Length: 216
Length: 299
Image 1 (cartoon, each protein chain N blue to C red):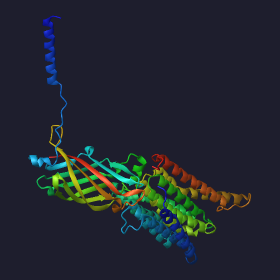
Image 2: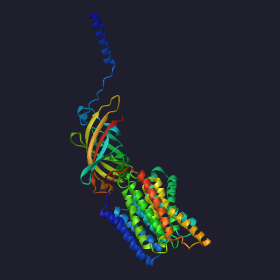
Image 3: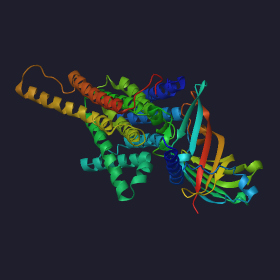
Image 4: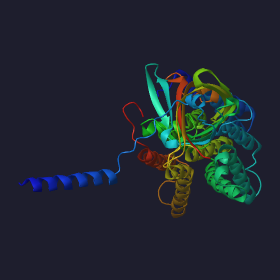
């Protein structure tokens, strides 16, 4: 191969390489999630109205079975809204609603039983709701949220500590995001669900993880 | 999900013993229908409260209203509200009472999808189903029917408990079991009696309680509609057999052939029980087919 021909091949290759770099989209990296406690420190305000993203949120629970092991389950449909006020957390508001008939314990017969009048009576009491009444800022961005939870037709007070999981700014593909997580314990007998206490534990350990998108 | 000692005590023994004692004592002083209504009504309420506990007034859950329906049936059975007056008025009374019972137990759930006249129509349709079965039961309580009609009720109640149990609700099945226990005690005490007057009183609380338990199973659990219809048809099946036996008896009597067989004889009772057990068995089979498969652990 002559020197001239080699140079022309290399030249064409270089031009094609440059063009491909210019036109082929590179994988876009998501903006790194930040701690929700951070925005205030950086002057980045996460305040605003948010709608819960059911797909990226989860309600999982575990209950003792035969005093031997933990049975896990989840609710697949969660909806609700958040009003966040970083400067005045006490003005923040949380509203959650869980569809009882979305209970999923990886066993159709058990799910049917859980939805029957023996437990949730899903047709009679189709939703579990939480409405916050008071929000207090604790250390490290943790919020203490107090409110009323309604389940199985009974309304009881509930106070939980909510840990911020992160925030992300708005991008061209979606709204600003904020994430939170909390774990708490409920006694099902407090809500009139007394069936099979013994073989199944009375205390239910719940983990609620929420991702919400800003709406304004 | 094995039954506990408490389940057996409150769900089977208490209602059976109480109903039996009440029937034994009251039948001496009161008409059979009144004694039957009180025995089955109070026996059921005792078992219901024993199993579920006293959960306050006003009842919050649909299942808690079933005890109130039993008391309503007791009052109807004692007063004889559906046994007096012209046929049309008696039928209307049954329809309205059954509609009221349906409203107490499943009115809240129906009210989510229907309101006003639509809700009323739904309640009357459901109530009509209960009222038809109730009428069939009272029609079965003919003189000389012996314990046959109570046996029909017992089979219906047993089938109802089995269908409810396989269709997702142990609580509803237990409540049907409570009624089955009271009916079992009544059957034992009435089996040798020639008169079926006790059934006239038993029919009101039993038909109303069974009716609303089936409605609760249909609307709150996963009882297949076909199973509910078959169970509701059990008293009608027994009535058809009884009417058929009467026709055969009349033909035999008019032709003078053979020995005179009674339409209330053992043959009729056997045929009734075979038809009733067949209908209840078919209801259970359908519920079993519709139910998600059970695993080794019972789920």
